[in-house]
Length: 269
Image 1: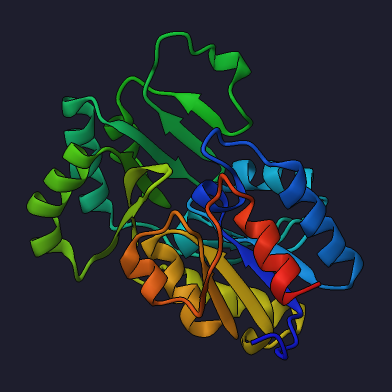
Image 2: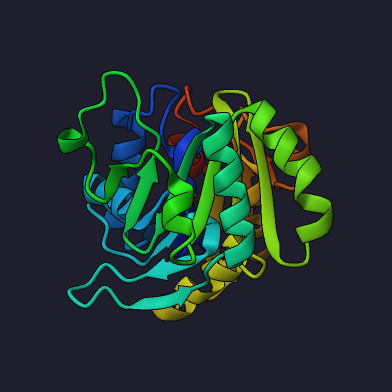
């Protein structure tokens, strides 16, 4: 594996690049900077929405295309912010899921282009939320008017009810990505049926003139497996589930043990 020439590193964010406190550690930051200095491209592939992903990319000092919303959106970090891909969720399903989420009080995030709605929480000051994130009492009211890019819901109960109520009837109309890792809360992401981090990685690689086989993909969740399958090398985090680890060529230390730095140092530097 060490003989593989890596020209691009694709990193998941939550549970991978960031530790359990959602912090970017000095070790991971330094490893990314050293990779970039070596001429290796580094990009983010995340369930996060564009503006939140862009903020993390800014911390890393990278301007590569961003894979957001679990592969439903691939967008350039340029003045034009051109979208290389944008797949929107089935409208009727989005309305039903957000209506149920409003009724149940789920920890839910619904993204429409560059705007993401979250449930009000005690202590939240809307004016201090990150760019593009805003509070909505009822996200279903917004989903009734437009098709969202993605609906992300946290919690085992929510995952179980979504899986039981919607998955059997709607699997052909949407992608249901159920994600569990040891150091990050369980969550499900609903996107367009064609949304896929692996396919999005191919699009980003094409934009950068790099073959997917020259890519290293690092992640911790079910949604990252498709990247492992198209990249030259897939590395699962130590906090990933056994099923995700089984799909990877190597297993790094956990996200609380600077696993990203380990992977970059071992396979890139």
